[in-house]
Length: 460
Image 1 (cartoon, one colour):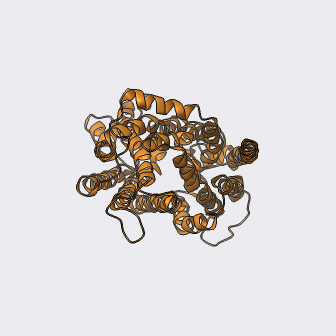
Image 2 (spheres, rainbow, N blue to C red):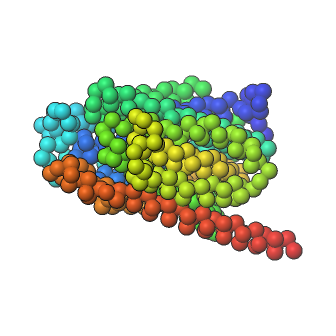
Image 3 (cartoon, rainbow, N blue to C red):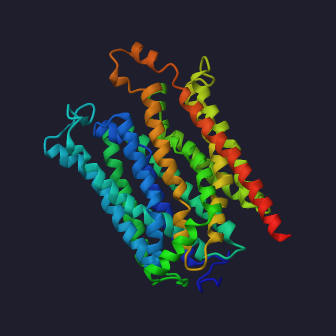
């Protein structure tokens, strides 16, 4: 694979760096909203825990299912056009999330007071207007999922690919860190209306990304663009008949089901268990902070090991992280003065979870990109995100059920004492996810041994 004419001293093209920069903006926008999406749905629009979890899960899942198709379409029309479409849709969608509550208020459907939420209209059909708005974001985001990671594949060689994906993943997590940093200071300043206004910040980030693509992005790698739909169909068939990729996706789904709890369970869990002063945005930021600090080092450290070996290490860390999160509810007096044990153990669990991610995610993308024929990178990298579709649906769905059972909304109870009795086993939530992570880790170990045995037999 030849390099683009415009390359810097480290061997990466201008298109590589533009792709990574707009990915940074997009991740800032997405995580600023997603970290509090379930709270937005409950506090602003009046959905219960299960409804908010399922809407968020379907939204997140769609972001990862649609790239299978939008990735193929991106291969056809080219990555530049795809990014322009994506960031235009994202900008419109985030503006819609910010404007929707105001429109409903103007129609007399929302009451603003000390708490901003639907007033006595929890069965109102108007609140479901959120669905088409989220669909616009989902469609725009689905292009980004396949296009940016595939652009990294196109703009790197086999010798620079691991380092390229390490840089890409570092940018993803720097964007995630920055986006989540915004919400807690905003919530301190203006209360629950922060869940509305954060959407305008996200819209400004995607507009900036759109302008960057229009003005700066140009790639010399155009192989595969303009393919017919029949060619795309044959390429898709090659993917879905690759049993190794399908099994790997199912196994890695277990890891991501645990990882999804940063957004499905953690925000409501820490606010309910540690108090309203808890900072879910800052707590969640432990994950991208650790990844940004460690992913490059871990990738270099594991460079001589296979992708599957690196992923195996990460998979056995993930159940440990969930068990650490459970410990916050079991300790006695606060270990660190001024910090709830719930917060402390959540942070420690997220540190381990982030280290697991460093071992898994860049090498997972590398593994998939190496399976892709030239010109089909978008389709293959879009398909690689199928694990997140499955983990979003199941992870958020299970979270909604477990929150309702073990850590319900305090507003549903007549007294604090009644709520404390109902939530005394809240830490059980994390035992379920520790079990899921352990099963996935063992499954990947079996997968690695089996494929290694098959490959050795073929060489004989």
